[in-house]
Length: 575
Image (cartoon, rainbow, N blue to C red; front, side, top):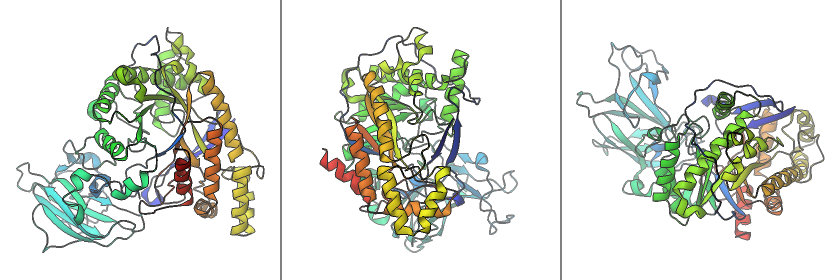
């Protein structure tokens, strides 16, 4: 029995989003959850000829998902990172008793891009009388202050709160000026009336932009600091920008649109992701939604081929961690596998392998004349040795007359996380004992454990860099057997224990310690020596919290950190 703790996220408890899962996996036994089949498989009995060159050693990064609380601050238009509409009935409105959120999102009258077309009349069933959204929330005021302009179309009433105050004298219809003093609260934007004359001219196309970017935000799009911090990396994995985990997207018509009021709900539009890659001149890694139809995949591939700079390489993966039961895609894959083959066990991985092969065939057809641009990817759970064979070899699909799934792809991908075993339950007391000896002693012992191992009891492996190297070597052999490149889709430290305040504080300080530069450099050197190709750091920016210290920079305004510097220097030394 393997006990595997998977924790990943950056939200605070007050935001009500817990990212923790405790998985107990018994090899050969899985428990299914119901889901409805939506992806239409293609009939494929032979694998396309591989013509993509093997990726070389390089370092990229995952991008943090779009959210009002993210310190990535990716767009000049803050509205694009705003929260979903909050339905409110505040005590200053007639008949209201003061509800910050009436939780009536299903009752909103929205247009195709998410703008409220109307608000309830007093005698309507919904309680709410206004809607609001948040920007720059709970990031300790670390965002640009000063004057912003709020540009909009339509008729109605906008209001502002928390860090924002309207400059009445400087404002005019269609253009409000707000004075912003950053704090932990962020900017509150309120729509208290829209389309009051019922002509269809409702408030829409609202943009919240620093006043100095008023004339350029529509074309420049991105925060210049974002471009500067990402520039050293060689590729970008866009999994979280695409809201891959638990995706509900299946049809091409479901995809995010450039004019959506926020990109925090359905993800960043493909056109914007392409623009970012081209601005940086960096390769891109896309994750297809697990329920995507063949038509969706084909149209996505066609748009990438049409718009993306032909000099850039494209990595394509089906969903993310389809083995991970904290995500809906794992349950969906199990349900689909059980329905197709009337079996249980590893059918979730066999379905994943099959659907990856079908996805790869579609992309290969679209890029038939540019096949060298594609790297088609299939992954596994790194510590569950043997699980990968179900997806790579997919014997149930082969029995239907098809070629093994690995023959349809170019690369095999794993994680490159290390913990030193300090997050394992049986080691927590020992680590706390280190802290009893003093912070400096604890840091010294933790660094030694990460670098060398042997100071704590093993779990499935000790989580040290030598332990991770053993996993690299195992999976390198699997990749070599099948003539595949080996990639890391996420890697770096994985020190997070949400329920242990003392160790959370220690892990935050450990991640900030100068010697983490050496630990990251050691990790990357071991990856290089194991014959690995692309290594995708997880992740770019994030405030450290009980949920983890995932961002190698805590804020886009930060210029350096030991972990970020290690990545950048490794890229410089190996380019």
